[in-house]
Each structure stands twice: as C-alpha cells, then as structure tokens.
Length: 157
Image (cartoon, rainbow, N blue to C red; front, side, top):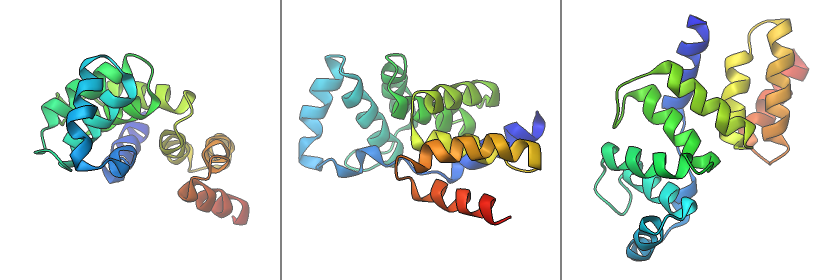
C-alpha cells in the first residue's frame, strides 16, 4: 500500500495537465462566465488555468475550487486534477488516500493520463504487470504516447 501511495504521488507531481493549453487568454472572461453558470468543462479548464498560472495568476486555492466543482459533476479531467492537487497538497491538505480515489475515478471515466498513472502504480512484478498492461492499453487506445511506450516496454520485457 505504501508503495502504491508513493508511486501515485510521484506520478501526479510529474504530470502536467493539458486540457486548458488550447484556450486563448482573451477567452478567459467567457470561460469564467460558463464556469460560474455550472458548465463542468469550463470549470475544469479554469481550474487548470489557475493550476498552471497560464492567462491568470497561479492560485492553487482557485484551482482546487473550480476543479472540485467540475469533478463532482464527473468531469474526468477535473477528477485527475483533484488527484494532482491532493497528492501535492496544493490548495488543500495533502491526502494520498483521497488523491488515489480521484485518480481511480478519473481512470474509470476514461482519462488517458489517469489510466497511464494507474498503469504505472500497478507495474513492478509479473502479476502486477498484467493489470498495468490493461490500463496502459486503455490509454494507448486513445493515442496517449506515454502509455504506448510503456506498453511496448512491457511487451519487450
């Protein structure tokens, strides 16, 4: 269990959210309006902007607040962000158990970054590698290059 928590925290802290990367900074006011009106994708994107400090002043409390709103609506990107925030203690107290729960939700809901992270957590011995392979395949099928590479490594070894 301790190995799982440490691996999960390391995977999250090395990961970089990507969804909000394609948002033009001039569109942030419209994004904020949509987020305030309850649109989960807008809330998740705004949370990622606050996390990264792109287009807005970096603020982990805001990142947590907006991401939580979207995650509670089942947005898999926001669920992944919640895992990152809890793993790093950013905008909230560090809590590896809650971080792992959000990661699992995100992976089950189809987020390829979360599926890749779950694959990494499960990797390490022949029995665990079967489970890792299953998660890597889900992420790789969505075109996630890191998962495709890890899947190749598993087949090679």
